[in-house]
Image 1 (tube, rainbow, N blue to C red):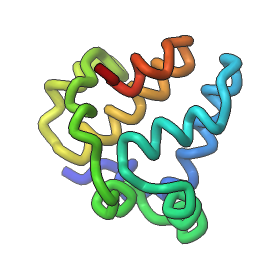
Image 2: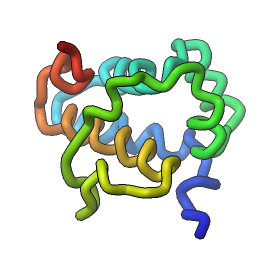
Image 3: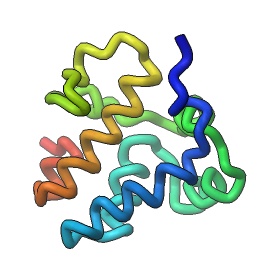
Image 4: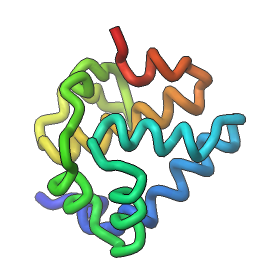
Length: 116
């Protein structure tokens, strides 16, 4: 089963992440920092993804280097435990959702980025 989100443009989802963070007093720069940390894109690469309207699937498939510590992300998002999601692509999507949630909930950046 292919999830609808996989074929959506990442550029459609990105402003929602930013809006969620800003509504809670966080910044677009913090959202970008999370995305760059998790995927290995640089700022230019992220802007290219947005400009070219790459799908969520391509965004993750073409990510330069998924951060190894992203697998330390645990917890529930949309009623599902992220660590139990079987579809690898959906797990990546939910990891990112979870990080943005943590940002919006006021968690410290070093905790969000799973730094030792």
